[in-house]
Image (cartoon, rainbow, N blue to C red):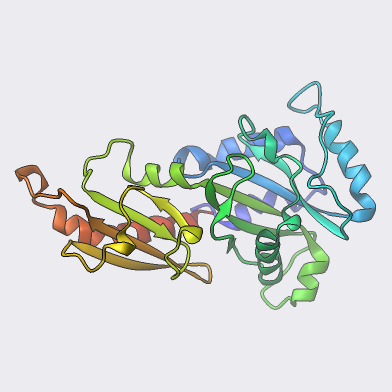
Length: 278
């Protein structure tokens, strides 16, 4: 299992990692290939306001992957802040260029997750986000990286002083869950819904296998149904699984009741594996 220490270890000996080194390392550990639900692995760097211009210039002149560099690179959204948490490296980059330069600290929900990871030294989950690359639901995990060795007894103040940046694993909602159950819909009369807390509203809906059917609105109907609670970081994600209208047991589907009752546990093990893996 690849732990957070393995991912962050490449930063321990040096103050800066070039884009080609980041790309090579992520490809070497095969994190995305072995876990197809992960959309990208990013490096988010903390930059103080006084170092903002120097940081922008260094990224623009990084020709390690592209001989033209990134002359249009900038930090966004605009605005003067005491510090920035900027998406500096993305692997793979293709199709995700829009996220380069995005300041996670400009968004309150992302900022709260950054602070939680920073202060605790542990992997922290963002919960549901609207991703800047797709404008669609997704979520992420943040792993803090420090300038010096931080141990379990370090205070939150010491961690904040020594924070360098974060490894940021991004999951696109649809890609993630399609990777779990496969591209072929073997059971069209079963619906899966994933919420990032107990409030079963559209605002908290991470994934809906069948958008035309709402499990939360049909719980009183006589269906095969299960609800699982999955602890992700300090959040309780809710997994609803139910049969839908038109469901019937054919000879090839006689095991579906068991699937409905156990699929929640399957999701739980999958997410647990992801948390351990990163």
